[in-house]
Image 1 (tube, rainbow, N blue to C red):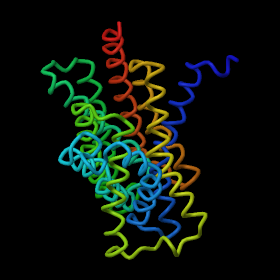
Image 2: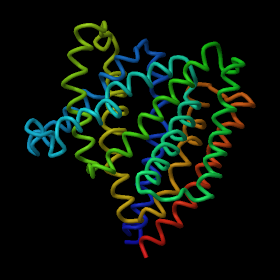
Image 3: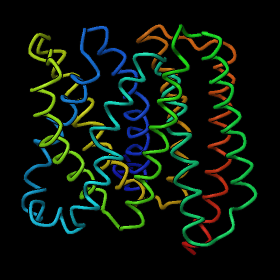
Image 4: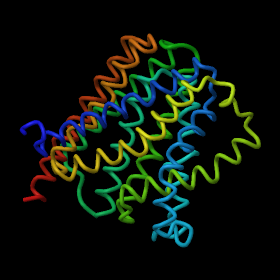
Length: 304
């Protein structure tokens, strides 16, 4: 019976979630080896996720007022966290390794969302958080330096810049969802369904679809991994783990994402970070860990 203890299940849920998120960038790079384009992979992501979330969207007033959040807010989170962001991030993975994306994007999300939260609340940013973010920014600078030197190939710096922009966008998406009190399932349903209904017709009409030229095994792999695991299952597991463990414990898991993204990319893609990039990844992980520890202490005080 100990195997089914809620806390253990929550820990396993969080571990699986960071594994899913750490591997998503690797799967996009893997898709390029199957001759899929950034647009193909984004279409598969929102087709699979959108079909699953469509009944929830429709039954919860999605067409009326975007599930209670209003269409202005709904479209804002779709732009920041839906198809435009996904396509742009996928394009970046055509230039730079998965390890760069797995380190840069979570790092920028953490910096943006956390600072926005403190500033919006009119609270002073703790010194420990500032120190952690300084380390993260140092790591980003190291990866940018590696990209400018062409450690991982020409054009890497272009991909890194795209990851920075995507991280900023996702950070604002996270902040707005918190500010507007958008639930995890509601956010996933709106982003998935609206992206499917708007992006997929554009993709079919103007972006030369290659999906039907790919083997069914490739279609199912990317649809399930990008759409169902990352958008639906990941959110459900993360929400469950945070509810059972509390914010203080849950905050310790995001720094693992860059590590897993890098480690998964080595055997799957053969992408071994160069020395400068490796230092950057380590610095980002260390900085995120510092922020997580400081944030966990603050959350623990708030939780009593």
